Amino acid sequence: MNKQHGFALIELIAVIILVGIIASFSTFFLYTGFNGYLNAKNATEGALNAQMALDRISQELRSISELTSTPSSTSISYKSEEFTGTRTLKYENQTVFIRVGSTDHMLLDNISTFNISKDLPLDLDNDGSNDVPGIEVEFRVGLNENEIQKWFRTKIFPRNMVEDK
Image: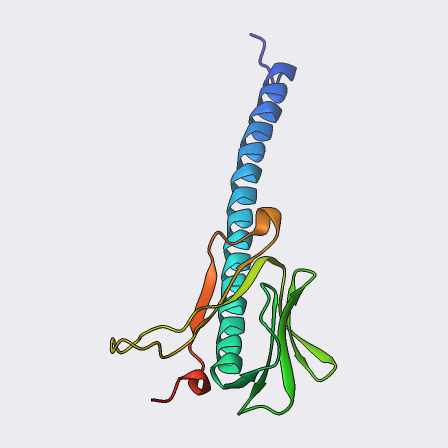
């Protein structure tokens, strides 16, 4: 009787093919999981930064004492009770800035769409007179495939723009 020792060539090739298949599936699942984690992390950070920028914009615009220029869809200039000097909230080159004097302070970058609008005064207490003009700010964070599929918007009713009765 003739005893064989070791592996035949065909057995080695089969093992190499099986190990390759297992490795390719493992790599695919690891890549998919890691990519999902990075996308979720980037979306969460973008949403947090957008919310902080909205909070800052609300704080800035809530204390307007006078508008120094007619608001456009991308900028608004104003004077504030809380802050000194003329200030401008503006959108330029996918970035939102607050300009104080001649210095721009970046609030948020990577903005795909931005809009500022001043609404007509609203009758908030239903007495037949228009009381408060509102300022609405809205934007979308991200460009192309990294875009967060949500509008970030706020409506501000500046305290000092309430009409006296």
